Length: 231
Image (cartoon, helix red, strand yellow):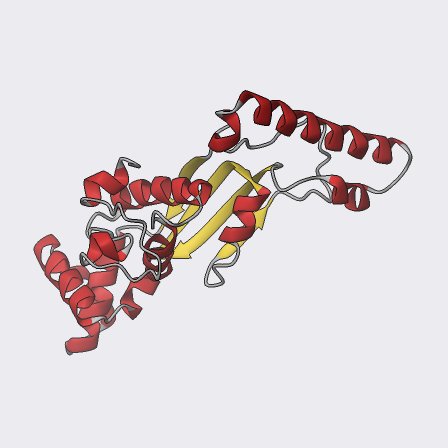
């Protein structure tokens, strides 16, 4: 199974909410009144101002909840390093691995001999796991045999500011291929819900035409469309 991301919940009218929160910082009056009065045109103007000035704290008021299915444990271990986020992950302690379900890297799948070795090794690991469970070994201990390739499922919540940070790192072409694909799907979904919050998102080659990597990839994205297409 390939990675599949769904947006299962989000803050209502996130563009407008963030703009209203920013407006409060610079205007007299109550927060409720300011939120009611923000127009679409004003929201766009305020969000552009926030990005230019680096005043991103209002972005933290908008949250997005994603379901992430069909990724490997190798990928999920990278995702949970983003500490300003909330994660719920399918437990190998309580959910038994009934059959081999794993993610195959493209580089492995393209070489028949490598793919054969990969599958054979994983199937043996799952078989050994099943034998330990049958012998009465607790699942929480039997799972030590299971590899990074094991498929897993997550629910991930991030606010808009952390998402921008996540996209800047994980959409870079030097990021690992699997988490880059997860980030690409997350950005597509986030832009549908909040087009102006994420109008400028991704690595610096897209956001400002520079590269902050010590070892540049040598083939930066041409533009946002190129990034979203996954080239």
